[in-house]
Length: 412
Image: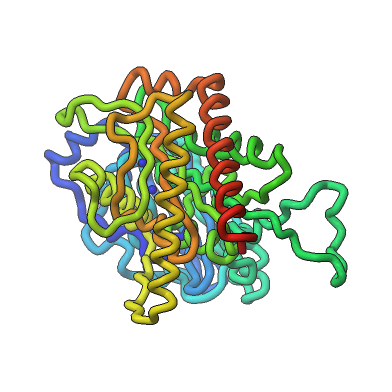
C-alpha cells in the first residue's frame, strides 16, 4: 500500500564499494554543488545517465524539493551541509524503493526560475540543473502549485471544493441553503514519489487512482452525494492532510483505496480486505500492513503531528460513535462486495492506520486485492472488474446512508 517534504531524507554518506556494486543498476550521482549568490543560485547534480525529475517549492519554512528516481549517491561526507546564496543547506537520500529526494532549505523566499537535465557533452557528464531566483513573499506564494499555497490550505480540500453542477457555478446567494447532501471523501493511497506496491510493471498508486476516480464518478451519478478526492493526479499527499480533508469538509464518510502485496517469503494471498481503525491489530498481517502504510508517510519526508491526549468525555463519545459507524459501514461494504468481488478469507480486519484516525468521520481502508497475486493483479488492471467493483461499493454507500438517515436523521 504511502507533496509536502517537511523534513526530507537525511544526508547519505558516500556508498562503500560493495554497496555501489549492489546498486549498479541505479543511476549514480557523483557530485552535487552550488554556485551563485543571494540573488540567483544554481544547483548542479552530476549523473552517469539522464533521469526524469520533479521540482517544487514549499512555504513555511521556505524549501525546494526535487524528486528523482532511485539513485546511488556517491558524494563526499558532509555534502550539502554548507550552503551558498539562497540555499542554507540541502539533504538527500532514498525516500522509498524506487524514489530518491533532495530537499533544499532556503534562506528566504525564492522561486524555481528554471530546471532541466543536460546531456553529456564536452567531457561533462549528464547534469541536473536547478536555477533559483530571489523573490518577495508575494511572488513566492504565487509561484507555488495550488496544493502547496498556504492561503489555500487545506490544499486538496480547496482544490476539490467545486462539486456543484456546471449550470450552478455562480456564487451562492445568502438566501440559498447550503448543500445538505452527505459528503464522501475518496482517498486513493500513495502518489508522487510514493509508488506503493509494484508488480509486473504496475504501480499501486496508479491502480488506486484510476479506481478512485471511477468510484467518484459512479457515486456522483446518483446526485444524492457530494464527493471530494484527496488527490486526482500523481501527487504525494501526507496522511495527516488526507485526514484534514475529511475533517475540514465535515465529511460523512472517508474511504481510502489501496492494493496490498506480500513478500515472497510470506507465501500468497488473494482477495479484497476491508480495514477499520483499532489500536490493537486484528492479526499480525494487519499490524504489518498498518506499519508499512504509516512508515511510507514518514519516509516521504513528512513530519506527522500526533493528536494530543484528550480527556473530554464528549470527544470520547464522538470517537466511540464514529467507530460504531465505521464498523457498520465495513460490514455493509463486505456484504455488497462479496457478491461481485473475490474477498480475502478474513475480509474484515482492523489495525492502527493513521489515515483512519479522524475522530468524527467514519472511515475504512479498502485493500482491493494483492498485486503480488497474479489473479488479483489481472482484476486490478481490468476495466470490467473495476466497473463491477465500483458498482458494488457505490451500492454499499447508498445502503449505509439510507439506513443511517432512517435511524439518526440528517447527517452533518
